[in-house]
Image (cartoon, rainbow, N blue to C red; front, side, top):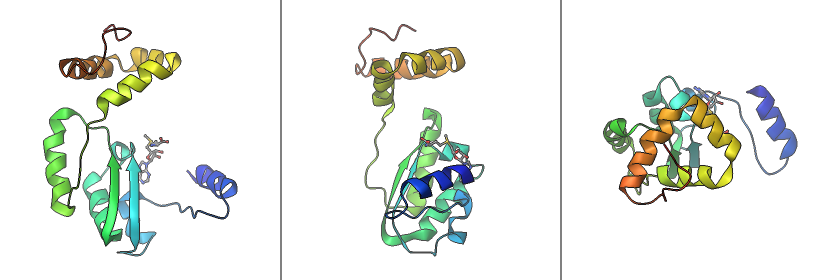
Length: 144
Ligand SMILES: C[S@@+](CC[C@H](N)C(=O)[O-])C[C@H]1O[C@@H](n2cnc3c(N)ncnc32)[C@H](O)[C@@H]1O
């Protein structure tokens, strides 16, 4: 991880400040109640203690701060996640982007799509079924 931080510091030396820290202990890296915007995209499913992460986000955000949270979550866990989020945050909006993600895979990358087919075939099957039931994805090219 330090390699990525070094890369970011070299690439954007003036405008941004990059810190290395543990998402579950954000308040050890930045002072509490000081963050205006906090973005966590497609990462937190790797954090061992997600509850601690969300509590820490709440701690470091200003009272009028905004948290943008994108997470891969199985549909059967959505209800509990929603309850947890509403415990600490005033949820302004939520969006299921599954169909858009699948659509971009379909349009964008044969290599990536082949990788997913060979390593995580269940993932596409499950989500394509969900999308088809909403009539968002065309049938072509998603032949599972
Ligand atoms: C799925 S990857 C994130 C990918 C990122 N969204 C991207 O597009 O490049 C998850 C990342 O979370 C990091 N991670 C796991 N536990 C963490 C923690 N407690 N604190 C900070 N980062 C953590 C992992 O090292 C990994 O780089």
